[in-house]
Image 1: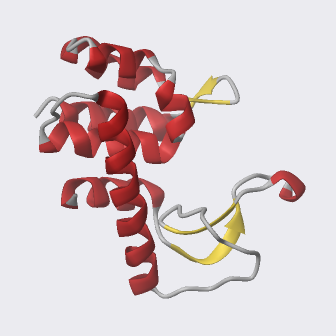
Image 2 (image 1 turned 45 degrees about the vertical axis):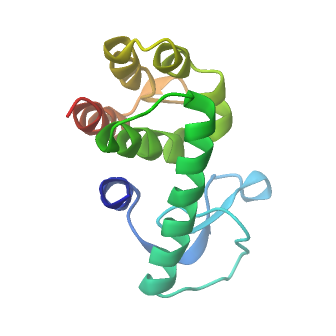
Image 3 (image 1 turned 120 degrees about the horizontal axis):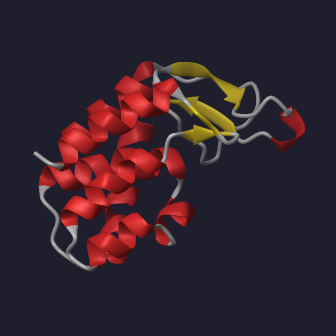
Amino acid sequence: MDTALNLIKRFEGLKVEAYPHRKDVSKAVWTIGYGTTQEIEPGMKISEADAEDYLERDVSDLETRIKILVKRKLSGTEMAALVSLVYNIGIERFKFSTLLKDLTAGQMLSAAFEFSRWVYIDGKPSPGLINRRKVEHGVFLL
């Protein structure tokens, strides 16, 4: 879990005040801490310790959900990379991904390649996501 927590902290950054995750506030998902979106309301403030607790809860939940979907044993680094990816893209997108299909089929190198496909924001490659996916890809292959 520590590797996943560190990856997420590195790429999400810490925000102790709730903020809208979209420019259009009326459609925004309110976010706080290291990217937590559950039960967050406008104006909410937390401590760094609270943010850590939220992140640990979120990561534990994601690990459980990923294990249910993958249905095969993953190494600690494979799981950490997947948790970081899914934390960013969402479990629903992961459920229908080629990455999950490759994992289920035991095609680990093909699955690792799929990380590089999740780098777009509004149809354009994002330098930040490209960097994040390279790091996750490397962790996955350790």
